[in-house]
Length: 367
Image (cartoon, rainbow, N blue to C red; front, top):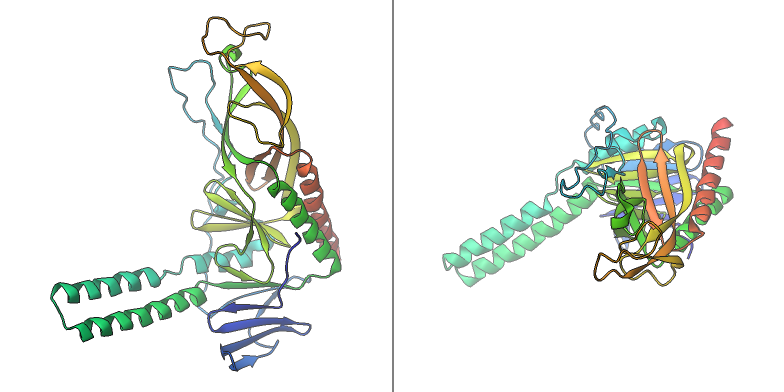
């Protein structure tokens, strides 16, 4: 499927255009726009054609607070079930703690814009309340209509203000090598998206008595997830990003770094600081396996020491054992996300794509 790169981005009445000479900004409506050229007030980051700025100037972003890295805490298991050890959470640290130093300026800007309060919800509540009061007190129809029209105008203006005030414009001008590497990443995620099913593994618990758990060595808590494409929160960008929901967080794979959104905060991790580990695992499916799952054997819901069915249990049905692929994203700063895919081979493709971008980043940093 590939990905797109636009030359411009619209934010409310503003239009940001990317040309060979740099960034341009225009404002107005169709048929009448006033603009400025590349020598305006823009921030140029790095040497690889990356530009970012606020849609409108605002207060300086507040510094990001520092905290100790959060360690996953075991989840207590039901005391009546002695066949499992406590579940160990597989979860990343807070985005406040994940960023590397190369992302500081951009992350501060995104964080500041994320904290800008929205006016639209308050305008909506106020408009509805005003109309309701007039109706309750049987005001003239013309007065109700006038307030309703005025409320709609205020809503439109509030929506436009929220769009502009909360937006961070991030434009990429990728050269041939960078475009090809990011295209490989999109292709790898296209393959992952084509899997019959994707899961995010939330926690794992060691099995203390395998005969009660189909002979499995561990039990996983997992939820289904999917790969999406589009713009990350707050950002207005000319490049289609790969978005991977991960519980309370959202992973946004950009051309130069991974952005992690969650809990009202955001973190940036360079691809040279991102580790992608790929393994295959046997998983006992209690439900119907996805159509592309590779079934390698079967087992019983309750097994005896020899691997056969335990005759003491009724309705002891056979269960398929599927071979799945596990893809783990890690960083030294605390990222820890585990994705399980029913489709085999996609993890290696993704690992190589991330490695290609990381290689370009290292080579250009050394110049």
